[in-house]
Every structure is written in structure tokens, then in C-alpha cells.
Image (cartoon, rainbow, N blue to C red):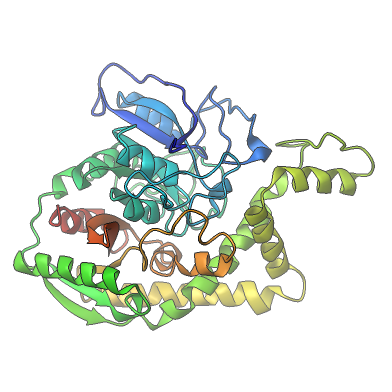
Length: 423
């Protein structure tokens, strides 16, 4: 059975030399590549060919990397399993018959299957860390602002970041060094970290490292996942680290807040895909504007995208904005405050990346709420704009388990160092 990793297999050559010369990279299909179609896993953009490169693609080419294809993904980044793509689901190379995780499942699967040395994904609520955990590879969600989002097709732009996936922590950090840095074309990118050396931090030295374990992020997790997590923490303590239990009471509201904010931004960002300005046009798009618009979006979007647009539009509508969207923003501020306080007392926070092992293909499609709750350990990080890494921690019943380290803003070196000690 084909793993269905790539939507478009096309080689884009980089420069002859540079830190990534001779390395191959898979690029998630919501990152623009000049002259090569960028579909976002959607029928709506099935024939869209960008006229320009995203900043991260320019930096890959300047660094000598060879892009080997556009990786499959959940439609517009909306999904936890990589099963909502218009181009079909990806099979998990590390656990055949199971999902690779979403929405960067194609990118993680490309690395796990050896189809690419490295990969780029995007992380809106865990979309790099989830597939990294499910496929047994390393994935980094950078601090918001560290990597330019210019050329990333927006889903929820206050939450999402482009980040690396790789077989090892050091290789993921090397790729992060290439793509990180300020960009005049992205007003949210930051300038203070242009000279950081993330790969050098992968030295495995955790002697004296203070690890906070939020008790709320263990509650309700699969028993085998929790056992694997504690075995990994014990391994770190044998190397000189120490752990303390900490509390983040706000994270109990993070999933609700995240989905209100993400869906609200999605309803706004995806409004331009109407068959006139961008995207697929329905074959029978005559009649008045509303009918043509409705038929085009009915044909072009999948069920999960429609669900999120409708819920987001409802949350932003007159009479409900204060009841839902404003409260979600208040909860986001509470989450950020909780993380900042906890990280003032420890160096990093640790939790299982995903509370469950990979689902069987098709298992969660009929229960969207189950799929949303699977993101409980990852979405708080995006609400707080912090960096996090998922690193393989072992297995339960033969299935990969990932451990997530969360650091303070622009504390990528701390999470890279901690993760490298588990390899």
C-alpha cells in the first residue's frame, strides 16, 4: 500500500553549497513554492501554482537543500490525523494501518520513511509535534515570530508557525538555524535571535536541568503513554536533571479557547477562496453572486473545513462575539500567564506530546470532539506563543510515544538540549 506521502513530487534544486548541501527536504503543501503547485490538501487549490517562494523556501535553496516534493496534509491544516486531505490519507510508516498525525503528517511520514532527509511543517495547535510523536521522529514548534510566515497559506495566523522535522534533534536544530530569523515581509517576525546556534545546543548535557511536569497534562492520558513518559523522565534524572510537579490550572480551558480562536481566524482567512479572487470555480456558477459563491465553496471545501468556517463565523457574529471570541481571548491571556509563571521556576516543562498512541485509520473521523481533545497537550503552547519540541520517548504496545519539552519564549536552545539527552 502506498503511504501517499506526497501530493506533488517535483525536484527543486538549491545552490551548490551551503549548510544543507546534499540534503533533501520535503515541504508541507501549504508553503508556497514558485512554479510548483501548492494545494493545501484541498480541491479548492488543486491547480494553484504560486508565482513566488515563501521565505523559508528561499532560505532552503540558499542553504543548498534539494526540495523533493510537496507533502500531504490535512486540508488547510485542519485535522489531527492527516485524513481530511482531498488527496487521501497518509499511512504511518512507523505504524502501518494507523494515522501519521496531522496536519503535517506527510512531512513527518516523509522523514520516517526515508523519502526525505528533513521536512518542513506548520504548527497551529500541534501540527508538527503530533505527527512527529506518531511517526517516531523529532519536530520543533518555534516561538511565534522566530520563523517568517511569509508564503505560508494562512489558517489561523495568530497561532501558526513553520518548523522543522528530522530524524534527530541535532538535524532538526540545524534546519531551524537555516529558516529562523527576521524578515521584512513578515511584520510578526523578530530580530533579536538571528545569531542563535541551536544545533550546538544538542549536546545532551542536562546536569542540573530543572524540569517542571504539569499534572494537568498527564490527566486522562493513556496508561502506556504515561508509563513511557515517566521512564524517560527517570532517564533524564539519571543524567543529572531533576523534576518537580507544577500546576497550570488554565489549561483545562485551553482546548475550548483554541478552537474558538482558530476557527474564527479560519472563517476570515478562507473567505477569499470564492472562485473569483482565488480557488476552484464551480462548473455551474451562474446566477446571482450568493448562489455562485455558495456552490463554489460547497464543491471546493471538505467537511472539516466547512465545519470550522461555520463555527468560526458563528463565534464572530453580532451578539455572540463577547460570549465566545472575547472569552476565548481572555482564556488565552490566562494560559500565557500560567506558563510564564511556571517557567520562571523551572528551565523547561515536560509532558507526553500526545495523550494517546496513533489512531487506526478511520477511527476518529466520525467523532470530531475526540479528535479535538487529542490536541489537549499541544494547543496551550500555541496560545502562549512558546517553543516546544517533540522527541521520541519509547513505545507502548509497539507504537511510538513522543515527549514534549516546552521552553520560555525564544528558549529553543533549552528544549533542544533537553531533548538531545533522550537520544
